[in-house]
Length: 497
Image (cartoon, rainbow, N blue to C red; front, side, top):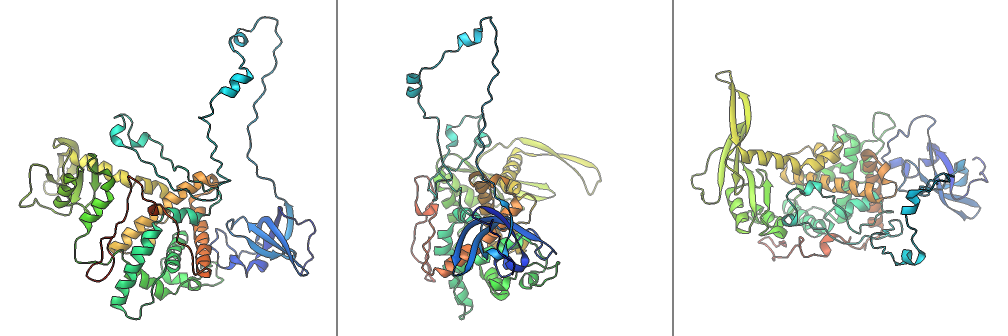
């Protein structure tokens, strides 16, 4: 064992080899570097020191694992240098050179000096000091924009969105992720529905709880960081550089992971169609506002368009139907079918029936170019359909998404993967804006830091069995927001909200 360096103090820059970190968090961490590379050393900063008997210990935060503090003996560390103090650089106002000229300066004569009394009387209402680093808690708030009050030349794309009073300068990526994840809905509705449905299929089912569900999500996040075509590779650990250094067996058995994936559901089915109720609940804050609801074939139907029209909402929806319906009320609905590579049918309660863009394609029978003017409603639907996924596509940064790692056609898992993608994109955007140094963090780095933060968050939940329920926005209903109201129980005894 080498001797301790007396220069190591709090704030020093140190390094350590994998020989001493093998028993620490590095053994199961998801890192962007190869920990088995020969001669590799990990550098970090000393954040604290203490003495336990004759042995001195240091709390070190390494650069590749900035969200975790690791305790090591001082003799395991090599002194590098004193860590520089990270202070916010303040731009110094450049002093103008003094010009000595006997001729009068008309500019100086025009500028009047403000007296001290006038300076004290000036209003400082426009200066707001958010003081991100001092605040340690989330504050619940909302922002709403009424499209009817906006001018025609200022649509939503020209409005800068903001998260009001969201102070997360010192928060981990997991706290950003859990802030946008509907935790209360998952704990009160989704997990009980999974357990109830699983017990109907298998009486020996072990109930799923909140920490285990977060562990399942954490493993999915790790799969988006390190993609393997064979899922069995995640449950096999070796020293080979061609294998990942994370063994999922330490967190969950492969059979348990597959069982949760197969049995996952959002609510216990009660024999009634829930698409109408779901869409009406999502659009309830905008009743009688005249807005246009764009939906794909998962939600579109003539009945859906009529129900939205009754509450003052227009709609343009694609429906999974190749022909016209036998009986459609013509006073409100416009139904059209158009063949563009495949047959598309739309129902609409707004827009124009005039011709739109011209589509050109080769007739497979006559082998000649054909021009067809499709209705303008198709142009508006295609434009809006692309716009609703534009944000998620931009925030993917060509990385692997949750659809790629789930590899399923199951409706519940496809909806869940979309929900997790939206949550991760929002968490990444908020982390870059509000966190100190978040602007320098890339999307790939944020994902593996999110996986590490979720791992330690789950560990804290398991150690503290009586954990407090996470406070989310759904706990504080606001005037123009969503709220879940209990409607009793269904025939199976499950709660319906």
